[in-house]
Image (tube, rainbow, N blue to C red; front, side, top):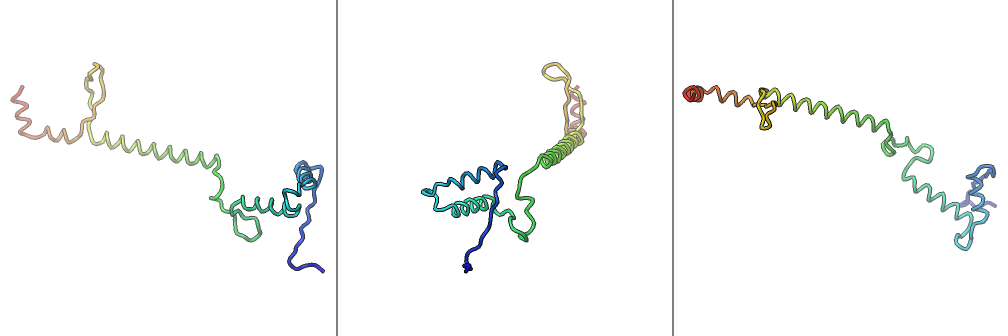
Length: 141
């Protein structure tokens, strides 16, 4: 006369296994003044473990486990690092190319007396090509 609302699951513990031995010790010496029963303790422990996994697939046919929901690996970090390095390098090259391409490079004497590089914009070169300015410069000196 089995009840239809009860199911049974058997657990076999190997006392040569350290983990199994710990579980056996707790179950054999469980304080029933604190815990209702050994059966309820096992149900609570398994339920706690299931809830701690937060939606990971534990049962058959629940779909494929989510790859993005887990941890990032060292290989993933190395890939991200190399992508960022390449992007930053190309961005710096583009900025330097734009800065150098938009102006002319000339050596000027700095305040410290050492030679340095000065980038003069192309617009300045166009402004000096103004005929009125050129005439005034020639008359000046």
